[in-house]
View 1 (cartoon, rainbow, N blue to C red):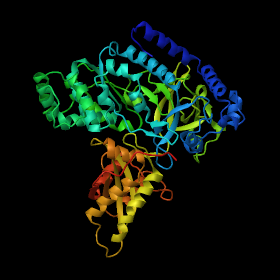
View 2: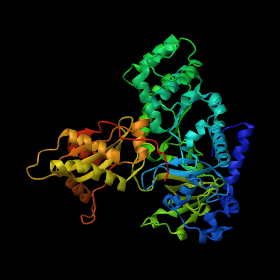
View 3: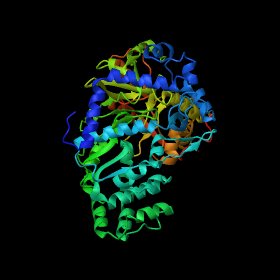
View 4: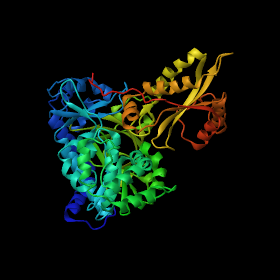
Length: 585
């Protein structure tokens, strides 16, 4: 890990990191022992023999998915305060996408888990400071947004992990001293108002900005797109030194912005107009925020598809994908923040949870055999694994659903490249749609075709990120009964909306509330198109007896073939229905 000279506090953290990564197996054994000692009296572990050592744990505790733990979690959500999964009281739940029913998961959280997250953040900060000296002295223009929170029947808060961070008192000092956005703007529930306030404050403090970021690459691109659409109004407000009444912003946000937009600034307004009125937006980030050192965004997984667009706008700034984390726990740090986005690897920190790995190439049925699991210190370079975690919060041998490849080692600690989410077919941001869900959505929408004597003969899909926000594109080849009229445009537009109504709550929220996903698009292709796809696959070595149409396509040549056969294009006319979950049962 190449590093420049750092301060004493960061140097101490880097020494701690080096020590943790040199003796991974011993650290992991200690962590598991701590977890088992703490949670041995829980109902879950008692029913499995109350293991107190690694060998017994391996022999007695099964590998599980969320659906296996859902009955236990539901009891906690309903108000059961006995030690069901964790000896420590559950303080709240983090919501995470992806249950079999398409509703958010509830991940239990306990009070001292925040300390472990802060430890990882401290190590990460030291790594970043060693590669970007002084970048922590200025401000960060980070686009941060809260999501809706709910209460479980037992009265516990259920919210996304980042929303809990942004609303916490611990984060308040960092927000005030290290970021350009006032707290009221970040906590504003209205996405437009929040984005507008954060953007105008970032523009006003542009010379202080040394780093720009958002959680996901798509989120930062959405902010750039917002600037493209609203720069004229932003410039007018900056020139006037006050927010226009035409921009409806609640009083707390207006007051917070007024503390930064204190006086008219015609020079800044002139610069915004000068740079934004140009047709070419290449390098717009460095043109407006000239002191920016790097872009802090996730570029792995589904976000990799947005990297070329961000390179266009970023003016050559490095894209730093810093942290590998999930609602279940923080896991790893990128020790080479200046690496190319395609080479990002995360070193798993052995002190935050107990990690095991299920070899993906040995898993044919989807059922996990605990005997196949490999410890963190015994994974092999080049192999692909699904990560399984045991946490202090009471998740035991829990399948997170991430598939990782071992790319190398830092000391004795493996480094992993993110490969994909298990079973996820389509994703443009936080949404995750699998093949079964897409099939159900197509079947539901196809019901509208029956009145016209038509059906879906074949289909495939892709995530389209040529425009921001990204959206789903579904290719349909239709089969019409003899003599039946063509399906009208209104019906096919309705099919788009019907598909969206059938997708999961995270997708529908992203469409209806966040605006982070665009309207679903159906492209009807001419008859015989999917036979051409099969012919192409067979000519490239596929067995005609085993061929089946792919439900998602990514190869440019295949996408080009499909697009060249399109006869009509249709979009969802309105966002799908979404309301916050009132109960988790």
